[in-house]
Amino acid sequence: DTGVSQNPRHKITKRGQNVTFRCDPISEHNRLYWYRQTLGQGPEFLTYFQNEAQLEKSRLLSDRFSAERPKGSFSTLEIQRTEQGDSAMYLCASSLAWDTEAFFGQGTRLTVV
Amino acid sequence: AQSVAQPEDQVNVAEGNPLTVKCTYSVSGNPYLFWYVQYPNRGLQFLLKYITGDNLVKGSYGFEAEFNKSQTSFHLKKPSALVSDSALYFCAVREANNAGNMLTFGGGTRLMVKP
Image: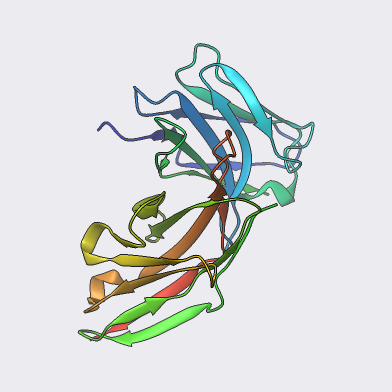
């Protein structure tokens, strides 16, 4: 499968715990994005990487959230001290260039109990 | 700032009939426009895009969309709907000179195609 891969697909965690999600983009894509989607809503932009550089962060990305893309390949999104409001689908996407479409992974569904 | 409006939460259409899913946008410069489809418990699948050129764009699964600059719209259309087209559809926009490629999505429209 040469698409965007996200792991895990589902994560249930207790409030206050830390969680980490992984995204493996399409191999030749140097642009990587994280979005968050809550039930009944469209995806909301969280952050953007070009290669290993994090170039843009949304105001939605509080200080409990951190994202990395250490070698310009896979990326991780960590949420510290999770809250019930963090429950959502976290989507990763990648694209080849500035004028091409982004391809999305199947997402990681986080449930904070 | 950029924004997208999808005025219909749900569109119902009979199989074989034409369908339209509406989208209007707002950007300060020229827009890049996209349609994505989402099936239950799945990620978003790309359908089509408008970057430049012909205002009528053809995409996957027989879908097409028409870019109308004066009306700031990018409605999704299909001449003959299939039951399998039933899904959640998202319109997205980004400004052409937004180097970050950040997409702003509409709230989505659920398409229900009845046999």
